Length: 79
Image 1 (cartoon, rainbow, N blue to C red):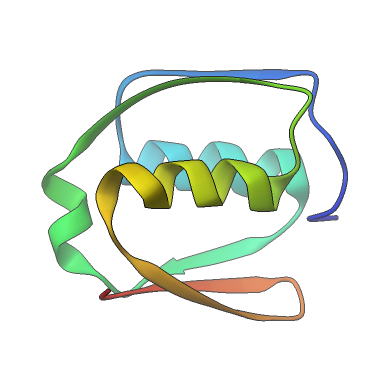
Image 2: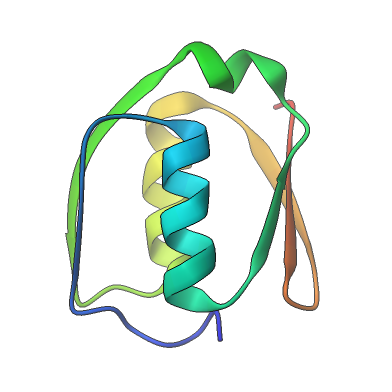
């Protein structure tokens, strides 16, 4: 679930959809992107021994979006 820690995860010039797919698989969550402007951005990052929330908060700090969580579903929203 979303509170498990991952061993490692690397993003290299990745689009948000690629990141969403990786996070969904790793953490067994559903992520809905309702913020279209994110699709144009690329991301680089290396995560080790972090939780889903820590990863999401790190990406959020560099990109500026908000999100809500309903159980295992995360909805990415405009800031």
